[in-house]
Image (cartoon, rainbow, N blue to C red; front, side, top):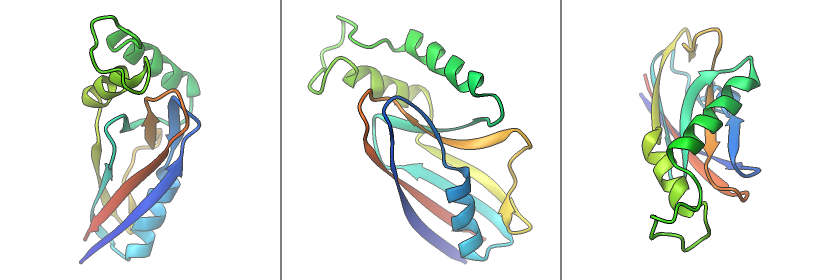
Length: 137
């Protein structure tokens, strides 16, 4: 059995957005009891991550770390067609993930107690983002 749905999210700009419940809803809708959920974002300037879902300081600290690795407006960048955060956003996406795979058991995502699935917007401005969820069970 395979089930696929596309979710659309509006981001507020740079930062993380918890999409765990939306992905879990697709899993429930699929009826799969055992299998995998493959989650894929269809963009090159945002990413997906599984991280701490209890303390928002973790996500703020991750933002600090990724900003050090791929700073906005680096004079060495050539690609800046959409502003100083343009190339940095692409680099941040490459350093993180555009796809995740989560096991399904008992009809639900088998995430750990403190894990959540997050859409990580790397652009400063708000965007609409599409996330494809494919359930195989």
